[in-house]
Length: 147
Image (cartoon, rainbow, N blue to C red):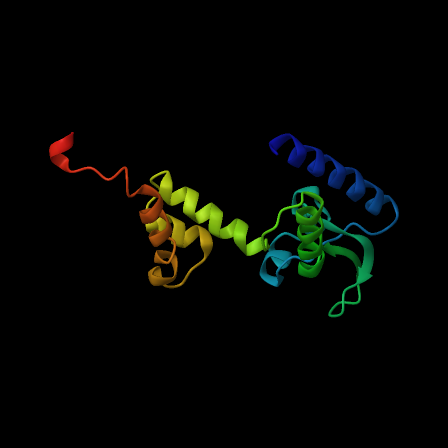
């Protein structure tokens, strides 16, 4: 997947280069950052990794720019991929988030770090994932006397 992501980043660089040549190529930057870094919106490093296919008009500024793919587009693509793979389970982008948190816990990442990574305000929200790991690890739990 790492190589595929590198390919995607290269595609975005080429697309951005073409957009700049066509008079577009900017991306929305939060206001304080836009004031601080005047040309950041035109820099490749600020472009979306998964941009829309079409240029659209920013409803606030009226500027023509490329935006990130919509949530529904991502959801539709996940659904199509699941169907193509004949996976007979409900799969959503949130499943990837849960799997990520579960694997982090299984690999010993502390719960506070996971809370921060997932953007949870409350540790209780993050602790939901611990019951799954407890079930998966129940045969591996050992007493300190077993060491």
